[in-house]
Length: 380
Image 1: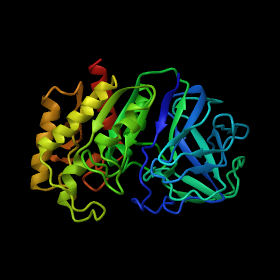
Image 2: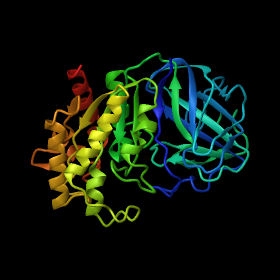
Image 3: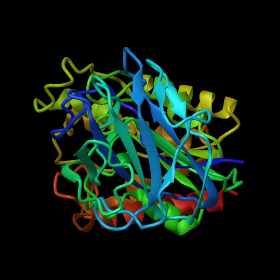
């Protein structure tokens, strides 16, 4: 039985938050991407996504290996991936491609490196904008390059790679569903310090991160992904081995209308708490229909940020009160309480503030993981 041990939610090719290769795509190049798994097993398989491509993408070859340092992999660990028994395959337009299982013993929290070779023009690449870890690109077929010396360009996004599944035989996976707070903005790049990483360490359970920076619960965005109520099935419910969903969404729905610094999301609708409650209820309905236990997380304090204002304060307080008191979630994680500054509960505690008064730092993400672990354990 395969269990999803790592995911990255697909996004439309765009400039994103930082320069990336999504719009130019790839041609006569190899792409090497490093991911840290949250479950182990003796075999694994890789899922590639062309969700936003209008034509098939040819993959001339693919490998997986244990990660060494940088773009290097452990000698002798490289395994060729096949797709339906062959080395080359096409990712269908607006579709996905699942590799055959390959023998490679991996442990929980071990990093693996996936290398893709493209010998034909891919066109714009379905990607995940904020990886907070390096992807490497080089010219030609570098599938067997153990040293990594042929990779001479770096990006902090993931491309085409949507999931890695292992034969863990587990059905107790946790999915975290949210925006940049879940994606890991504010954590130290390259260090795996998101709260999804911390939660996997604390619980020993498979944890998948279905966050997209800037994502909204109720509206689509060219940069920030499809609305939460629409992408839930693809990014969470269709993942094997997941039995628990933790929802942290709504701060961008509330806050984008407060700031002039979001040119990629204009005009930003002005929403009331009742509309966001309806969105949360739809997420709960879909997840319960798939047999998942659903936990709701209150919005973190964001006073003093560019998302804050008189209306944002009112709506966020109302939404948080509904999450805490309605009884509609199976469990509640009060992130607002554990992250708040005692001197001003609408603001992040200074010890947990990345610096923008909205995103936690590494210490804050550890606190979030502890709160989720405790809430899930208490509700068992």
